[in-house]
Image (tube, rainbow, N blue to C red; front, side):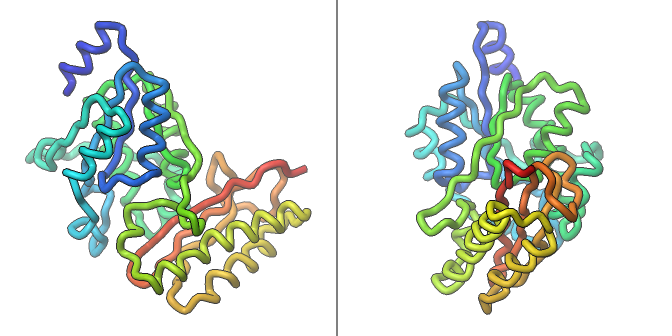
Length: 274
């Protein structure tokens, strides 16, 4: 892969890259279509990264369908699919990790303390292997996007990072590979995440600036469903991801909620405050 990418760069080609863990859905495909427009060569990776899963999480049962992934990738014009194995990415004796501090500590960093260390390490490795000029990520994983932006800036990586808006199902549920875990009853309960975000946005539009007040209404909607258990519901500064008490200019509402055994995340950016 490194040799192929170096050859493409020597030929003056712009490499656009979309890293994924596979089980592709429309959210992934939207990133690939944008990358297709922006680059001469579109490369994606499919790798379920074990170092970003904690003990007892769903690494072993994470949905996989490589044959379907290849078909969908070809349909949107992917040029190269990079599918390394775990021993190739983490050979015997591996002991080096990339860790971003403050922006990775709140939100998912509280209940998944080693998650972002795994993400930033594998993304760094993929950047070094694929050698892209630009890489595209979805805003559904907002904390991941902020963390990768911080890492790229801090380590002087010569890569443009582009974030694209969350792609949603017709019922408002943010597209995620983990949606496949939900049964019909859980799927109905999961719609409360988007409803609560929409309510929070409406309160903001009406002039409410107290995060305590907005979060009370958000929690009320989610907790109104019997199958939900909130991991966190927070309103943060969109750059630092620190909790804020009052919204001055803009903010991000960030949620992580367990629906049955499935943990889903979602977010919404509030803009236009005074």
